[in-house]
Image (cartoon, one colour):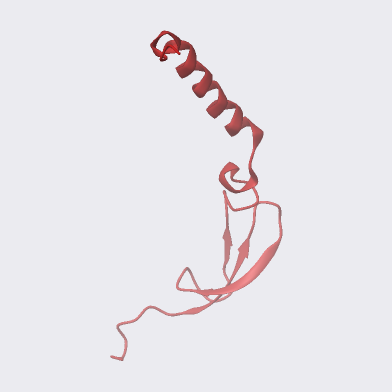
Amino acid sequence: MKKEIHPDYHEINVVMTDGSTFTTRSTYGNAGDSLLLDVDSKSHPMWTGSTSLQLVERGQVEKFNRRFQNFRRKK
């Protein structure tokens, strides 16, 4: 590896939205800095399975079915 062209790779503290922390290695900031997360796997609806997101999706399906109810095949 060439000298002095790579960023400094050091340990930082990551603070999750619920206050829990863990240590990882990164090029972010300086050694010992803390990275505060606004969104993480404990708060994002994609990972938590929030019902509000499911209700929105369910509402969209119902809206689609109402809109195209007359286009169904006759048996």
